[in-house]
Length: 160
Image (cartoon, rainbow, N blue to C red; front, top):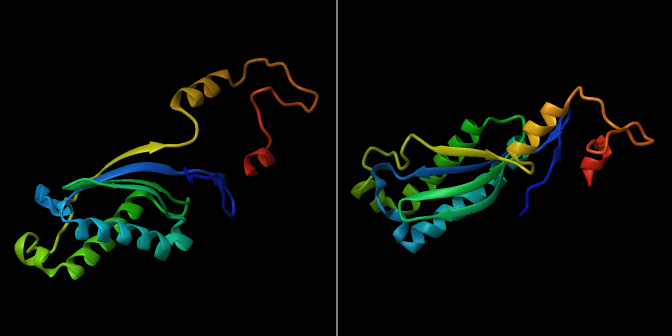
């Protein structure tokens, strides 16, 4: 898995989400392997084109007959809704241009994707880890010679 903690001008961290979105009217357009491959290429090209500005990386792509699953990582300068808008918009433009018959036969209104999407934020630590860490704050702890509790790490240790 290619998810890394990234350093930005005033922050250090990871933003990762699993995102799913469906084709409008649930048309099974990805049964056609050409459309399937073009969609994957479009998502990857979107990450290349906008990665420098947004920090967007497509970690994984799964394409089903009428919807897609992506795992994406992005930086603090962009929102998840912006990332989804970039991915859906570029892919729709690319697919409708490469396959004009899709516009004529299925998407005469010009909208390839359903407006909704599903997302699940994720990261390198579990929700349980964060809850436990928050609940332990303020309690007396045994410190190591460097003044850190056993569960604490220095900022430098995150860079590795």
